[in-house]
Image (cartoon, rainbow, N blue to C red; front, side):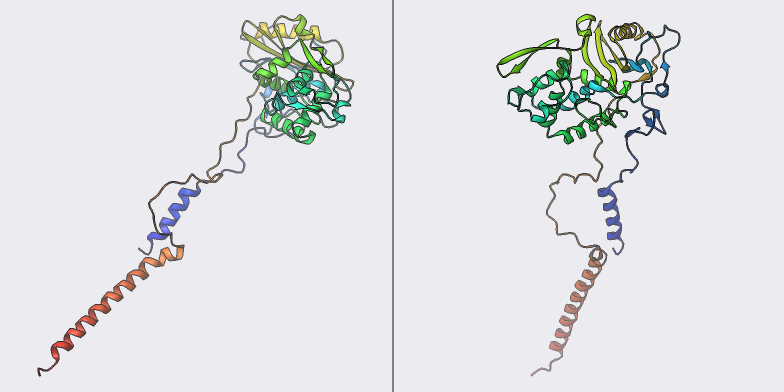
Length: 381
């Protein structure tokens, strides 16, 4: 008995505490890595080793992709995530308004589409492209998303950030979403894509964001709308989508173009033909890129399923499962029992109790025998 309780305590501790999680357990490539390309020392560039190259990455044994003046691009199959061809895919460049794809992807699930928003004076006076907001509660969140993606409204980007709890919170949410997607080349400093030191993305990351966005019905609806109505103090006015390929490329379904004097031209596009979707992203193009993007899309549709991919658009990081000690187990109904003894009591309690009981019984027997002997020894009267 002296040793039973200590052993039980050890067994119980092992059962209920469980095995501690390893401190080093985390998704591969967790967090932006200095230099280029994104990835980590163990696994290399995100999406495959070939995607770490700065130059053209194309499959062998097939016609090379069409030439483009873009410094960086990715052609990918949206269904399989296969990267069909690329050029400097992890090169970090200013994204301009293509960053609005991350803004929309981040905020669409967080905001009620029917909520009315009154833009602040800061939002109304945001520089660059704008839809023309006024500081009146005329707009729903749905209206703001529509103008964000159709006419690249920087004023809408700020108004949506305010509806989400403010600029700082929205930037934290955007960067967290980029990390979840494993878009480690991407750092958001503005919700609009206006140039700011430290802001960056890559053709590979924009393809990840586009692929995730196309899986969202509202995101796809906003990016594929050609003409929409937008509220005004007196009625409404029409706004048209800046994506020229929506009007001229067969099967085009979006997504977003961008331009600033520092970033130059950038574009995220997706088209669907015969039940298959191809994504093309380009960055840092110094001229008219629409025809070149159309040629890249044509090549993608011809190559998908017929060539060996050069890389892969990775899936988002899965949600971490809770560790055994992260949450207390649910209470279980048990029969009533006395409170557990402290460790010292568990070691000593049973032995002491037995000694006490034994001594009491022995004392009683002695007293009884002694009394009987005295009674029988008394002399007769």
